[in-house]
Length: 291
Image (tube, rainbow, N blue to C red; front, top):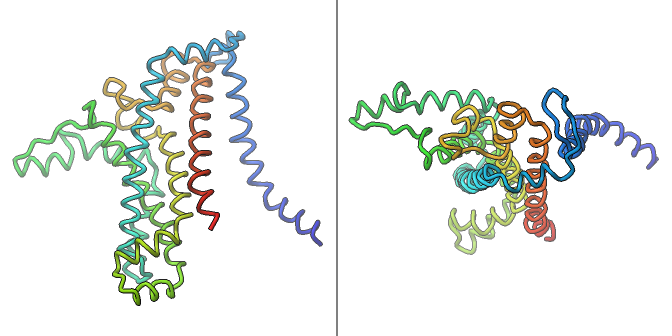
């Protein structure tokens, strides 16, 4: 009976494993192999490079600039998204019709294309023809060109990313919060706790695992940011918003068509994400599962 159930389980897992193998594991291994070759995008002029691409990468200032931008982007997006989602979870912790409607409304941007959202926000933030600039001009205020400002461009892109993604985080946190037994809140009320105290001392500890999961998944997505960067700033101005994925795309498909070097940077990004994810899982999800 046990073997029969295991066979059924493998049968249902097979489609997901096939998709993961074809679109994740095979490209990952291929990128690692290609990183040791000089190869253009047309698979011509192939020659063995050994560790040459890796030595080149460590002397490439744009790689370090892109690494810095990726980290800044993640440090901007993740806290903003988590704090906003937690704050709204506190306000909409009950399962009333109004709260259901608001949660559904906040979730809508998440299911929309990041490319479409980036185009819309680029139009809204245009200092000459954008709606926001028009409203501000009516009030006698001139809107700066934020997307062409080396200091504010990455902040604006991070804010747009938060606007799109916080509904997903909010949905997960709300689902976890609604699963908390009412008896815990009643006990807290007997101790004189108000709504804020109940959220801090009851809700947050009970949804710790979900918070940790959201932190890890949001971090992985932030370090792989590309669509919004490419559409809104194309990595500018002066490479101030160029992330690692944007630089990989530039070297592999736009300027040099150097597939070997682009694969090398991809392997570098993979190890960054793997190490950070391992550390976060060890010290967040790991501790949360011990209780």
